Length: 318
Image 1 (tube, rainbow, N blue to C red):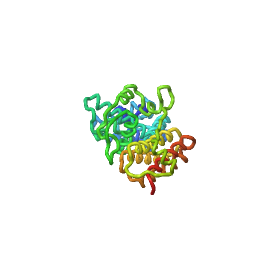
Image 2: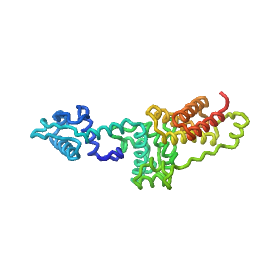
Image 3: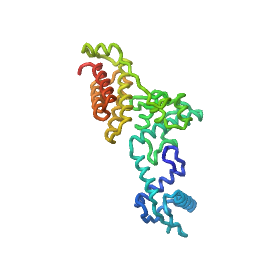
Image 4: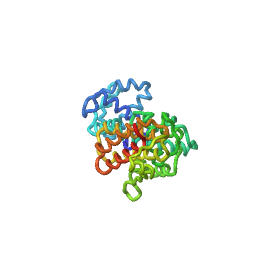
């Protein structure tokens, strides 16, 4: 059972994860703990299901995760988890609980679902269908609506899918596959690796152009007002993209990861609204500046903070 891409696990692997979860709940997350398997066989129900369960347990023993004592009657079976099995359980728990890993997995899962739908002759399928697909579960834990919406935004901004969202669901509601997205899936690579590595092996450069009238306004100390122009909103989006990209390059704790994700999500949403709440947007940019300086640091953090400050200026007075 390979853990590199949870959403591509076979149904058999999904069953094994469920069995391992049950064994761990009985104390099997430690090596060599005696676990009676009779209650597990009782939950399996009919004899055919019990035989299938026995085959799964024996296969897991063959992989070196369990030591199974298989008596004549299933009610008398027992097992002990090996050190390798305990390590597997630990990795599964890490992947389930790590927000960075889940976000990365969600992007790959959604892109592959869009590819699958396109190849099946259903381009622009409603994204709501993702949640009933085989891609929707990550190590036994379904992806949330927010995770998939965020993934849709990320994939669209990266040019891997296209489509419009809504106020409540910023990600594409009817995502369509682009040539770049098709190329990633067919290469067998993770879209995260593709996005972080340019063709020559270096990180891609993000170029941000600040409109001339904004530069002049900052120089004169004059704040603009009124509806956000398309260029204004592109600058807000640039803050979100650069904050996310620069933050991904540093080590950070889970609290900062969640905070950055929330700010990036909110900034992306605001970038799509010409009549965005300026006071709320200003507050978001304050948080973005703080995170850029404290959590990212260096030249990258200073660059993001400076761009966020320019965006605040264009919002006009409080």
